[in-house]
Image 1 (tube, rainbow over the protein chains, first blue to last red):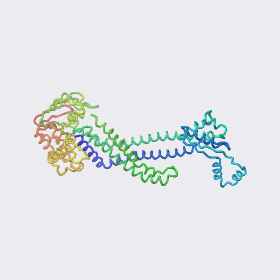
Image 2 (cartoon, chains in turn purple, cyan):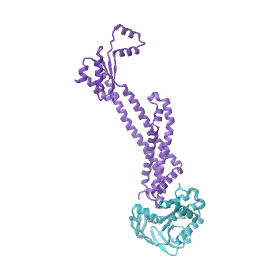
Image 3 (cartoon, rainbow over the protein chains, first blue to last red):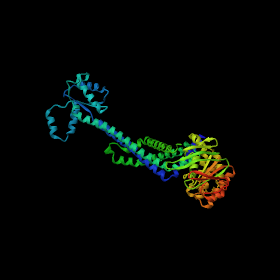
Image 4 (cartoon, rainbow over the protein chains, first blue to last red):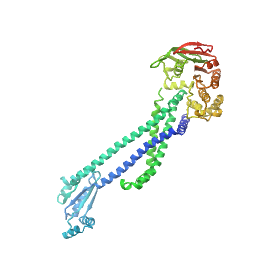
Length: 307
Length: 225
């Protein structure tokens, strides 16, 4: 009997959805808006994360060594620093590499290059470019060169300068912006998603309110509350399924446009991201649509099924 | 079968039923008459436990229907068929599906539904309208469909609340004839109306209400107000 009733509930819900025409369309469109907001937020979060990673990648500490410092001493320091848990990577630039890079950078600046040549020897020292796993950890890394520990003992004589203190303000500000943007993004996402869920819930509630007399009739002919509720929940779930299909189709041209027009500006190709994550995105939309539709219908109808 | 024991129903600003005591035996055809606001519909709502009395008790056989749990109430309602003046059909279902719904709600199997529904459609002369939706039917057809839905589960009691209110005399006569036939087959019928012709056509017990009180209870089917 359970299987027969389940089949009847599903068929009845499907028929209600198909026969309600304009009302079903209205619910589906509201749900499309909600799912579009959710998908847009996923896109925004992806863009934000990519941008933040890009910014993070540009933040580093440069340790400059005095000219003539022994390469073995510097590589020993590189090895020690690499072992620190906060450190993501350490890149060594020798004095001659620094010179080559400098000349390449000023290839069109004849006066500077001439002055350089007149010096006779290489005035530039070697350097280490240190990247931390998180921008907030640069201060900790910097302390290793200042404190009285194994690293600082080896470095005290050969370190010319560490640009952390010069960059500290910028690094601190960037760290604060990154953390703030993430927190704000989370709160804004939550608020937007909540608003769109409330709007969809209200639409479904209004539609069920219009059916309240029919619900009363169903009760009077002896249908159990669950048997009355079932088809409405099925219709709500179908609203979610239809809306997720429409939304995913809608985002194909949107992501193509974003990929073509906005990749340079936002730093990530949205169409590539959409294509690579198509199944996950569709599952998220389908899951959200089905849950919002099903739960909204279930909650909206329950008030008409009380004794 | 039905027993109202000193039942009073008060709403915020008026008394709809005032200390009413009536009983209806199994197999009876009882017409309840009275002007608008006399309390006729309140009686049907109280029998269906859509509303509860302010004072007094209502029994269906030996059960006080106001103490039933949600599940017991659902089971009780399955014993009662209801016909309304405004038909109250399910607008998204065809005539066939409207009738089948009542059987499905009771958990009847598909084979039984496929046998009984066409039979009842034939009984109310709606066989050729079975795939039509309520908005595609005339008033008389809608009411016959409502009756078909009410009788498909073979209830012990049929409550018809102003079933002829929206019908022309010809359709009204047809509906009353169906109710009389059902009563002849042993179903108890409670009919509320303010239509004199309908009462004359039925010719059975008439309870007259006035301002929420029972003022007459005649066995011989007279309409006196």
